[in-house]
Length: 287
Image (tube, rainbow, N blue to C red; front, side, top):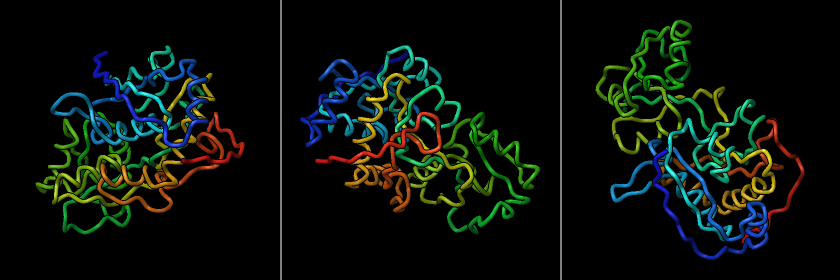
């Protein structure tokens, strides 16, 4: 594993002493750094800085979470495929990388509530007719990042909806295929499509596949319910005071809707209707 581990020594807790104490007791190392990791190639969630280290939405989000817990944080950059095994082996306390909550994953990990919704989304060239339904893609070509989940979905559904698929070695190349007129639309994740639009003026976010929507949340080991619950309390306070929404707008270029996950403290602990969810009500004590 390559490491861009950097200790971010953070300021004192902002009125969340009880939560910080609970988290410290959970880890058994009160005041010790929270250990976590991201896939450092997944812009805009985490990607390299020119001056070294990593930057991105998830880096900012969990740096602020740790600050409010009164803890330093150490963030490694590693391959996504190795993150969950490293978490279960005790190398990390939680994962700062965006992890989609599925039933299978939730049976083996404890998740906080979602801090973002992830969904499949199309991006189109500015000025093109918007996609109102999948019928609008009949006879058209779409671009995808080769080997991605979006590639797999497109290949599986091309015949059903009557579009053709062109694959590219990277998401930026797939976006440029739309801008250059080689394809009508690009299919990717909603956050990556929105981020691309902030960097490419002729590319705009468009139709979202609502049925693909899922929570992106922070996973903990199954035996660390107190750690999960403590972090969720902080995330809910950050939703309540607008911090999560502000970070989302900064990195993805779109103001979240009132009912988006960035603005929604969910009841209980964890993701509703998923394994590991605890419906017990709790009272927020935000500074």
